[in-house]
Image 1 (cartoon, helix red, strand yellow):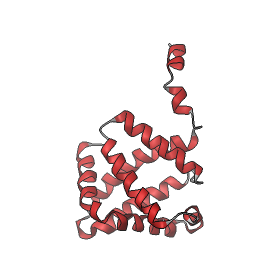
Image 2 (cartoon, rainbow, N blue to C red):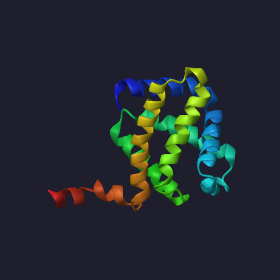
Image 3 (tube, rainbow, N blue to C red):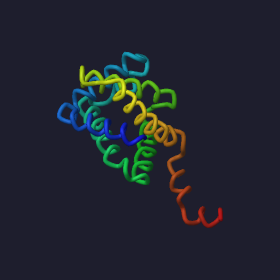
Image 4 (cartoon, one colour):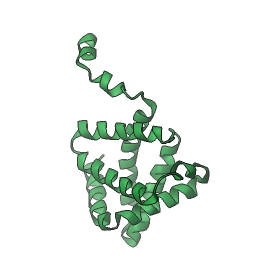
Length: 154
């Protein structure tokens, strides 16, 4: 992400943190509007718990973004967990669109085109890593970083 966009994402999330539950509610509402058939993914989840996990996850990823190893491993693990919930590769584009919409809605007139682009850029990064986790077996990252594998490859 470019530094200006990262700053915009961080500042807007800091502004939205006090209303993080409402942002999460907007996100899930929009996601269900975009693809109603996928709404069953959340049918068994407690909505309050789901929204809480959503905003904690966003905050954690933003806290880790300056630590590439932690950021990557957290986002990949998040994708792996989402795969166990039934999330598929095709769902990430809709999630990104719902996130940008929710942030823009929550900010109202303070939302700008540049801010929306910054959040899109952030989600493209997060979504790519989550897709990796969604597609990979549970131990793929362990094998990639295993000393035995590294020694064998060179």
